[in-house]
Amino acid sequence: MKAIKGSLGLLVLALFAVAGTARAADAVPAWGLSLGGGWATYAMGDVNNMLSGSPMGSINGGGDVSLSVDWKPMPALQVAVDLEELMAFTSGSQGGVDVKLGFPALWIGPAGYYVMPFADKWDLRLGVGIGFISLVSSQMTMSGQGMYSAFDFAGSGFGARAIAGVDYNFTQ
Image 1 (cartoon, helix red, strand yellow):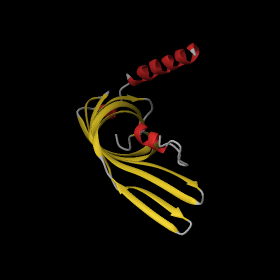
Image 2: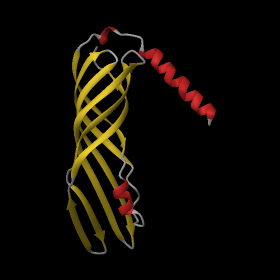
Image 3: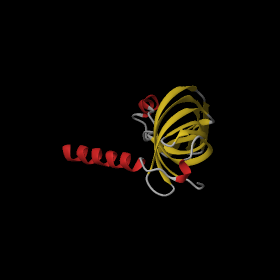
Image 4: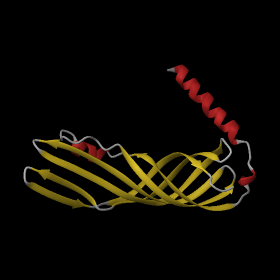
């Protein structure tokens, strides 16, 4: 275990060393618009507790699509307002009845990132954010054996998140 921690430590130090290299595109301050997509992990303990014992699996992640307005006051710092759609789903089957549960949600809020360039147009971003999250068109459907039922539900609240990603800069 110590070898793994040591290797991770060296990797982090190497990334910080490479992050010190500047590019011509790092002129600041700079404004930008970002479009992204990827895979997000979710802390959905309440929902997963509800699903325990059911034929459906836990919801621990799903795809996401985001749009951000970004401002870089300095090369290694980026501030953004993110609008992100999170797509969390699970399904299962028991006794000939298929059950699907979806929790698509919208997230909007500010985030701050530490930006580390590591190749010509590539950046590693590590950040934190706070925001408002709202379930949109969340639904549970059950079908099979001549029956179909659908239940809609909604909810919203505030949250915090940790963010890590790799960016490709199309323009410089």
